Image 1: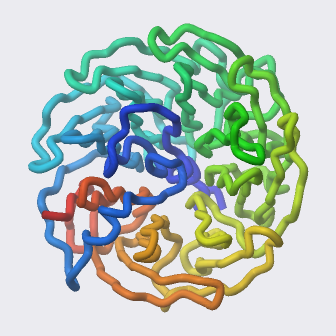
Image 2: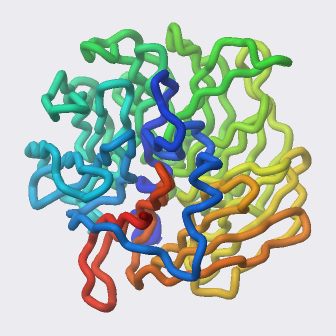
Length: 435
């Protein structure tokens, strides 16, 4: 069981923020520019026309499961090489290294998992942010790689030990870098000034830091209200505690909570909250399933429905045309793609897609359907609706375990991360497909 949850920190982990200056086709953060795993329609329509994909370049990577960030001509890769966490900035057309930043970050995973970063880099304006497995937060200049500021949050807030190191990722919005820390004295979430790294506020709550990426939600009849932060918390504790928090972003006040955690101590909350209008869907494996909560006017949370049909271990589901699609299953042998009615939670269907796909990350291609990257390196394009799923295209990119990283579709190119050596002895790498 412990081995099976080691990746929780991976794919639910990415930096999520709202910012200006993002161009169509950019993928500046985990789950994409809209925080909903939806690709730009120009990219979605034309990137996979034939049976195969053309490889442009590949970049050898170290340990970790971070999702690349792609903005304009730059690709940011966050990984670990020996005892150092590394940020590499690559040229999008050639894969050539434009700048390289490495710093010491001693860490050894107590469950034998990878000691690489769980979270993904994020680009906000002219800066890159990275949050490492030991709790080191860096703010780096996008053009040069110069460190603007850094914080050791584990030291500063006495962050409690967690199963696989630290990986709860910041929400960057309105000049604030908001980080789930799970520190002592109920220091649950902290907000730092984006320009200087200075503390702005602390949200007080006893739940520890999970591995899910926080998101922002703006609600109201015309969605005219102020955005609020949604944090899916739940770190190591006995008995296990955790769930969804709704936080006022200006002050850090906790406005609402919705308990959601497995009764099994060796479990974590890793899939990011999925915002659907004025509601939010959270999901966790180990028997706790999914919960749909309504964000009320005062920020409090009200449970609308719960289901045992979709318990995602770490891949974040997505919403499309009024339905929620996600992979249910604690292990690859039992994983199935599930469709739920977003209003009622009713299961419409479940499909293992022919088997051997395992759990997969999903990207919404709009009219072109869904893109699914299975955890062993198989890529599929699906057409889905309330009646079922149809496999339109299928391609084995490589055969390697722990392909848990979200694929990135940006600027007409597909970026896929192979985290472990393949059976054909291919190395861990980032691969760019396109023209």
